[in-house]
Image 1 (tube, rainbow, N blue to C red):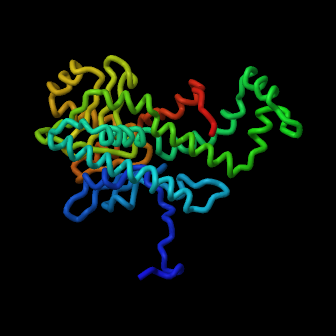
Image 2: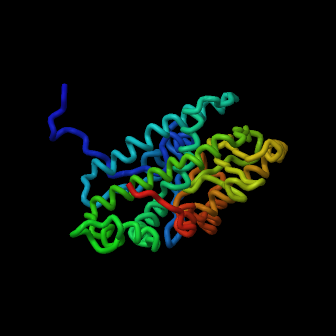
Image 3: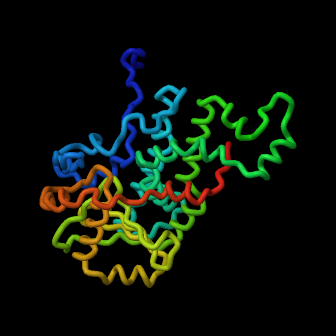
Length: 309
């Protein structure tokens, strides 16, 4: 029976930037995990469910649009991608090579989301968007002037700024979506060497955080790689060469766990997650000491060309 409007569930204001399927991998039999939260005056620790963390209220909210639009951005774009990523991860953990383009791309999109969909990323995008659009070249302004009709704003910059805020916001999120689904970057990750390493013999377990990906030497560098703890005892690694992957496979499991935990804890923005409290002191002493640089900042610094739709 259809619920009356008064009983229908409202769209959630909680927009998760750390997917719950990923967080669940650190939960125990009670369905909860250890959550360490950094505050100006210290670090709090609590045990909680994945849905209770890794989100920001109205993260994808757009001025001039109802909350349904922001919720749809997460539900329509992120949730299907997270589902495919979950299937891809399950296959990798069974030792299978992922040949399916759909699943391989789903996992790559999941990795890109972890690198670009966090609160700082969205804030940087919002803060820089209007200025970025307004920084037009002489050539583009001349082209606009040649096509300008009577009554149109005198410059392209003036035309852009004259658009309703609602339209500018919608365009911004369309472009943000293209970055999350960037074909060139996605194709490169798809072609990297992938492995899920079993580190259950290590002394300590793997930790994760709200900035869980470890990356070195750039995405395309010879020694470049991506690392992501996918459970307390499993580490996903992507490398550009088979030789570098062999080096990682020969490494001491204890060293791999130490290196991962150090990077993800020190690089955390606010949260670190663990399966238990055995590394509580390490987390409290190191959380957020060296914030991970955000890729979105580099995009604006390099002034890449974004097509406006």
